Image (cartoon, rainbow, N blue to C red):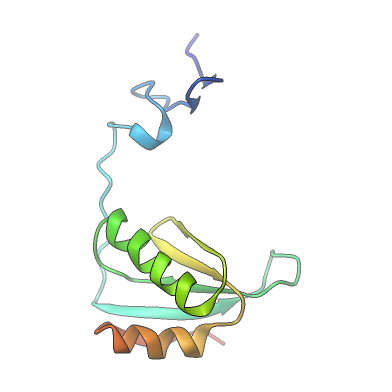
Length: 112
């Protein structure tokens, strides 16, 4: 029987039995994009709260986390990096597109 959780390290990977953050089974590479950052609002399944999702950002996890920090500081909101996307708390789609364009990204608003 394989160890699944340890109070010392947290959740463990099934394949290499390392902590999830240090898993060496699967290479951590971003999905291929077309160079355009898509910004959209989402409300479904979030208890009525609005979240702004930024997807299509090319780079590794370090680039994503640095950009997330900049965005959170700029807008004074919370946020996180999840599954190669950045989720910002609140309706910040229009401001995010403008700020990303200032930073040199090709960005556009998508969805409703």
